[in-house]
Length: 605
Ligand code: GTP
Ligand code: SPV
Ligand code: MN
Image: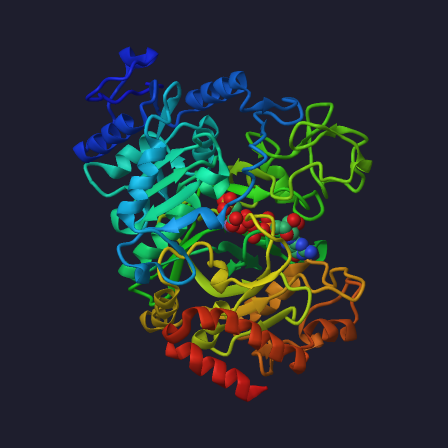
């Protein structure tokens, strides 16, 4: 059955009604959908089954509506371009709210709205917003089917783009009804693009009701509600209550000569997770048996295995919503393979032959193309052809380096946690924290230059604790305490590291080649985890000497390396003052472990 139809109390006309089924077993699901239908008043309803035929038909409808532009099907089979509203090109943190009865549950780093006020305000916006439109009912699972941590969500949306993207990013359709069974536990996700007016844009989370209401945006994390809203904000709240963690982390496996080590890494938005997760080691390493495989590129759910006392992780997603600018065959061949077929491109440039282009795809820009807004573009135009936050949505099964355990409900054991930011100055290429408690401090004080992934100024250093600043669904005080307390659950814990691929020289060029060459740093990290590599004790943590990192084949001398690792203590004092930005926000609520760690750091200088 391709198109399913729920039996509604106030039936809505649908052409496919005759062949419809009612997949929802639970009256709770039915009641909630009825309520939302009554509120939004769609003309028709489509319950997504998740089948291939349905996907094709949704895309065909999207093409007829101008939502999707077919690309050259010989060069990119199954690929389409979507251009979003130019006022809707990234997450909007200022429109994102955590709605809890007390502002203390929300904390000082989130926008707070009282739940009744939020429901009231958004009801006014949702009322009748789907008149003349179709409501897509999207049942989905976050996490491998059957995993103890897997969560069911149901998103109601009027965006066909969102429906198709959710089909790629999650395990979507009838599998979700099966996973739900007669349970009443699911995340209620209501979404409408509305009139896409930034003044009427609200992304509201109700962690106590397991509910997300998003209005006025059709882009990425604002609209694909399984991703940042459910898998990070709601999940981090649940994790804190239930003793597990939802983090903005990639997960990858590093194999060398038959031994495999899994690492998780938290870098802020557009700071290199997808690229690191899909890293292809340089030839020398490949010949020596090195291979990196991907479990996930954006989100990790982690828990402590009671039998082993070790941290394990799953990727709740089933696809990638990755940044395209800067991606090419040299920097990330696996991402290029991912987007070679069955991919939705958002806000990239369109070439005359029906292929796509973005800054950094080729050394030379095309003579002409249509830019991300559909306007004629030539290299002299002075604007970007692709939006800096343009993205590809591709199923993880397209990834040639997909880890065989990506679908394993039991996840993988994590040996290292890596924090990293985008820092032109001050922070070294790599160091290791002294222990878990110090590592939590390193993660909590993570700083990074802002990127185009969120609206607002780009390139200013801000504190982004654990790369989770925009995604912690509750009070950051309790989040940090949760991190410290996780240590007690583990018999042996992952080693914690900090990296910075983005240090620049006086000419403003990146000093470290990055991308595939990052495996050289990964090698030291893996060796440290397995008790094999040397390190020097420094005020920041354990650091490799030039001789401890393999620099062969790079145009980097040992003294260049020393320069990249150099921490100028005077400059670093400014860094510590920068951390105060976060401490002051927390004011009297700063966990005592943070204060102790800071004192220890200062005393080491
Ligand atoms: P989100 O999806 O927003 O969470 O981002 P992400 O952390 O997955 O970032 P991604 O890997 O997509 O990289 C973002 C940008 O950083 C791209 O333009 C990359 O080309 C660039 N980048 C990634 N890794 C490196 C690196 O090692 N060195 C340098 N110089 N740039 C990098
Ligand atoms: C991020 O901004 O961290 C992303 C993209 O991964 S979005 O899904 O739009 O949040
Ligand atoms: Mn992200």
